[in-house]
Image (cartoon, rainbow, N blue to C red; front, side, top):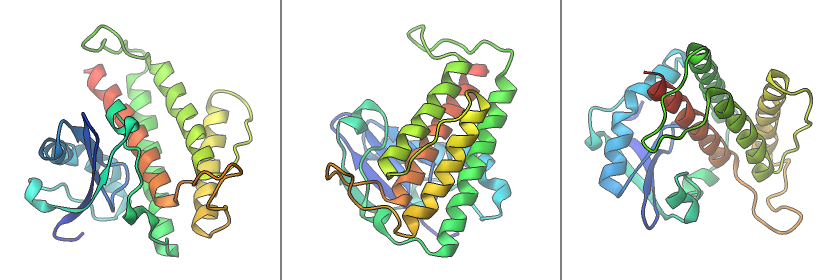
Length: 224
């Protein structure tokens, strides 16, 4: 693991995201850049719990000094809504076979952690949010599944919808892994049929993993 961890800052009008460039899924937000970096550090141990058994050598940083802002991008409405939505230059880097294998390993670790968190929370009622709302556990699982299917369209890869429930989750995850490989190999056109740019595989992976982990940590926080 490098001495300092590369971070992408995505600054919107009301919210800023700090995303680890080389550790997809580890991304947190704050009102500004310092707050986002502090939040990223605070969630380092939770990210370590997700990827610790991959053997990839992640160690949570002791403080923001261990982070290096490698790139800053201007956020958009998605950023302010609460999701990292702008690809960075680092996301356009080509994927070697080793890079692709690493991303697949991290994706599978993310899904294992999410599934384990859901299983631990079964039979409990999640605490309501500060305004008395919040999705049920079943609705969170459904939301994450549907989001991953939607992200596939951003990548430009089809999803053949099969049975509902766990069958559909398995189908979506298989399509994510297949689409990631196809995109990395240049088998997906850079633009869609209407001319819109498709997501690069690095951004696709970090956006998808951020979303699953964000909801995993929501489940954990609302279960305690």
